Length: 277
Image (cartoon, rainbow, N blue to C red; front, side, top):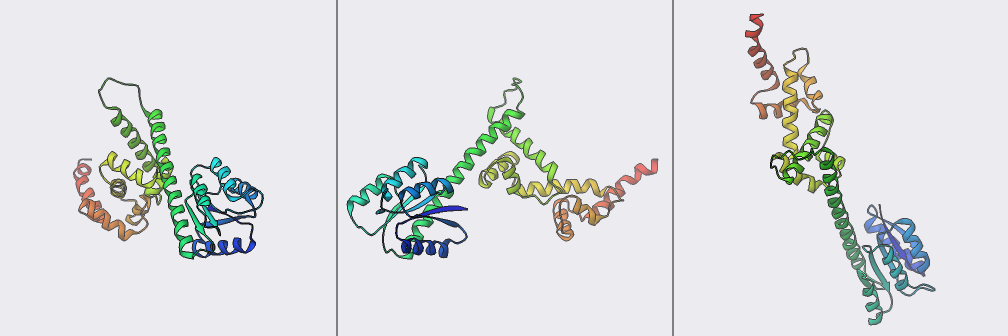
């Protein structure tokens, strides 16, 4: 949950802003309230807030001072000032702490919603960037764990890296193809964002994840179909496909035969060998 701090010494103002946030962002933002600047800094630290709506004029530590301390704790958080004073000096100080916006009270719902949407978007971008950095770190760790000492083959470092990642992906799919796995599952296991993993996967296998997994399951199914003691309906379950009709369509699309036709074909091919026995 993304926490947003609402700091204002006026109870009615806090209530109005909080209700607006709940109305428009009920499932996306959780509000944390404070009555003054000191409490605002404390609440921001306690809840790990990423957005701060601060009234400038508050007793004791005002909103500008609180913003400076909050900025020291989190250089990337979104700070939005709410004030009844339309003075240039306030605006200048507000942007001095890299405030996202400076809204006058009473403001419209549209203004508040727009600036909060922007703040959420900035947070999401930060999360994606962090995921990308983590993905690269995990890539390097995977390489370090699997890479052998140089053998003089002349293979580029980039090829070695991607080969190591491809081996890691193959191993995961081999272990989990019988389950209802998705691209998101594998990406999460490896610590990659979905978008970054898609690019990595396409580079490693020259096809997308769904195509690769389907072909992998079909190859496993072909081995099982060679065993006549296994019911064809059970074959699809054993390779991670729950819908037998869907399995039949996918299997035929990949092999040119239905599962039952493929089984007959395999049995027919093995007849000469059996006759010799």
